[in-house]
Picture 1 (spheres, rainbow, N blue to C red):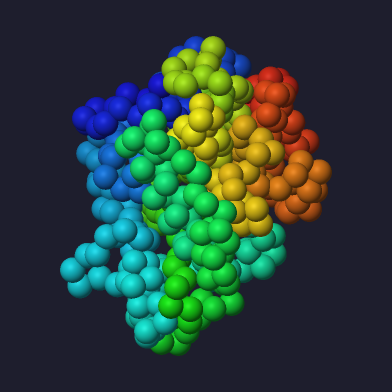
Picture 2 (tube, rainbow, N blue to C red):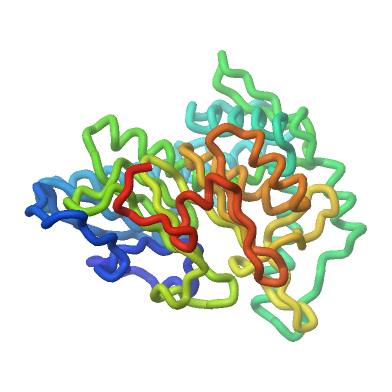
Length: 371
């Protein structure tokens, strides 16, 4: 497990676990030489409502801290831009756009424009992950918060309320003017919710920027979104080991509590599951991944994991893959270049795409081989 040197809140359950224990490392083919780089790690808990961990191999600790500070600062910037709940002085963000729905276009940072364009383009290709579902997701958010605060009186939202809200989630009414850098919601009752893509999209932006600044070997783990830069520079491994959370194990602390381990380099790993944000109604868990067609939580899987190069795309697709039946879900993955997936079925059985099997420990993969 990553050693966290600065204090942060304990996270009850991790979707993905960075495997850096000696027992998890592949054995060197020949006698290990002294690596040029040293491993450092640090973390923060003040962005995207999740613990973000950074593990990197750098020449010295001072160099690591420079990268880490830059990563932290950039995550804070993007968190504010993509925030749907809070205002920030002198800054127009997603909340500002929602507040001005049906009133006027809002001039925003290009990072918001690009996120919305990315989300609209991929929705047109594959569906399901609709960032204009804010009206529906807000209802679910309110009922979830109330249910967690008062479990004895937890309820499901009335379907009538959800259906009325669903009349105001057309992406066609999200008007982006790239020349003026503005976004306008034509429907005054609609709102954006970028929770299904923003964290992964931000992680990808930060990773690319750090690579451009010279960072060669790192893992950035923002909750369930992991982005690998290069390979571990430990003189042993060619790929990073990433542990997949077993939905039936509340805390993943070691190999015994993991579903499996996959090995990647220069790639992103994102999981979505019913064990993340949920509340209990009549003794049954009700999770946060809402199907835009039924307006209810998806019921096809316990969890899914998507592996692809781009973390924003992996985040977006993890919701799509989770919300459609298995035959459709697998067919979608197979027709997308460079995308692999794993599905944990309701009975606990596991299905995996062919490419995913090639990087899974249970199928013989190790960290000693390059991707």
